[in-house]
Length: 188
Image (cartoon, rainbow, N blue to C red; front, side, top):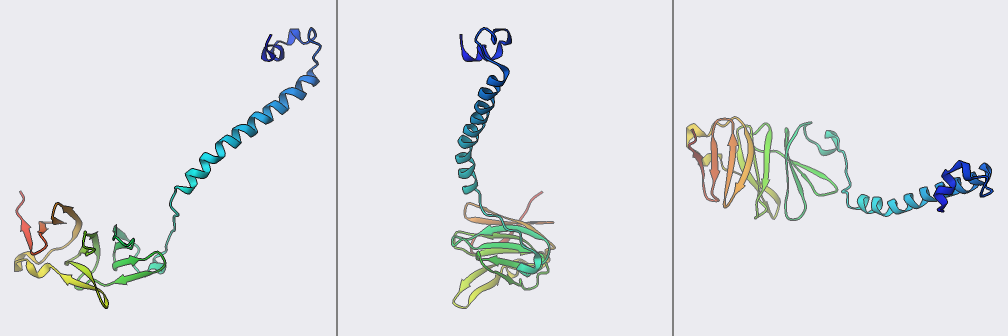
């Protein structure tokens, strides 16, 4: 007869000469041993899981020097993080924040870093990109490439890279940049 059957069958306790106290002395340590083994088996999995999780930080707007609304994020090949913010373009190098004002733009709503590490931005009334120079990031506006009546854009909400073109999604029109010129796309 198995030990489980012996422990569970109360009527046979007297037959095998086991008392309730003796059973407690067996069951409680066995239960504790099962808990300890179960806990020990679960620990390495939790440790691996925690190591694979990124470290998360929360930054106040006073720490990064921008507005309270962040609209879009992208990262360049060096690992720098770029954020479209209500008060400009934010750059985070892992230690400190830098804010870049976008000329003739009140709020930056979209950011996209291309394969050449140009940082394209779009926002209220402006489309362009930042490019690294010897003195730091320099802004190049693309808005002047549009015909006069199309230069008045209210908001750029998204920048999409598809094949060799960048598409700027605005409230009223779709703009395409083919690395040489910015044009409007006629859509219904």
